[in-house]
Length: 509
Image (spheres, rainbow, N blue to C red):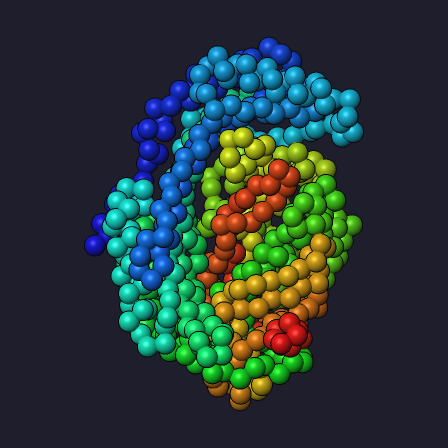
């Protein structure tokens, strides 16, 4: 049984670290060496990965990354250094090293660093919204839950193998800067997943069906009971869904009306809107991993991104979002703002260094580093498509408006070009729509479009009752590579005349 606890507090063992003495030593040394800006970030990242196959433990891995970083601005140039030894003497030496790095790079710097102003936040604490700390639950208890879920699937005819896993992360940071801010934060996130496999030995083929539960900024209460996600119902349905999928007909290609479930649409939002509205990509400053962006600043306020019903926000405050936090790694209080309003591009995601370049007085809080030894960069907020604010239209009502189409559920593979413009997405489950009703599953479905054509085909969005957060732990960016977790909320949505491909045919089979 999951025991509901009082609102969480920052772990005493993190607060027992010499946070203030490290900050005093590093910031004093940076100021004395001539830095106009300096900040110290102590970063502790604790993770646990559990994996089971057919109910048996395959791996159980625990890890902790602890250290601190010092950033400085000297004569308009960034400097950075980090260390794993948490002593004041090392902090002072690391700050001096960061200043030396800035001075060494000054001759190569073509753009004077100017940071947007931000209020001072003194001795503040922020803890994410969760009930049961997964790191306070013994590993055998968590393995027992995953094992029981696995056995439920394995007991069904047609399920040959089951993989189960849960990745759990606790992230704690202390930020302090020369302006006087001092911020302690703690957030917890986890990603549980189960996948059933059926094997046709005679044909030498297999098919899979995965749970749709998204990764979330919650605690173990999300996995161990049905209060948030209805595990029992979904696990009971998967064997029959998998058996139907195996026998389903292959899709017929061509322009098709699609009703896309939030469990699939979140990934399309991530790739075609989330990355495209990162300001560093839009100006060509960043291109690693995902390229630049077609949504360049000269189009701000004029680019028709989609139909007038398209309203997309960036939000680092939404409850249980993977990118939700109180303050970013620039010491900026997090916010919510518009990226697309009435179908038009109206905003970007940025940090304190990029805000002035766009003519803004303040950052919108998108700075983040994934370890103490990586420099903070501009990272994605929880980018979300908003539901219909007037009519709480259900997914069933959207389906009823389609004479001949497909209902797409769950994410799988994706592909998008380096400008975030041409893309192709598949999914977990596909249902034929005939006469406004679901009429069995289909196979081998992918939908393909350009970003503006796709969002320009959006004919209706569901209401608040269909809105759901999806997301991923593994959004990659930069060199050296960094990984960030991010959520994307959306309702179900109806798109008209989207090009559908047959993945089997496209693969030459």
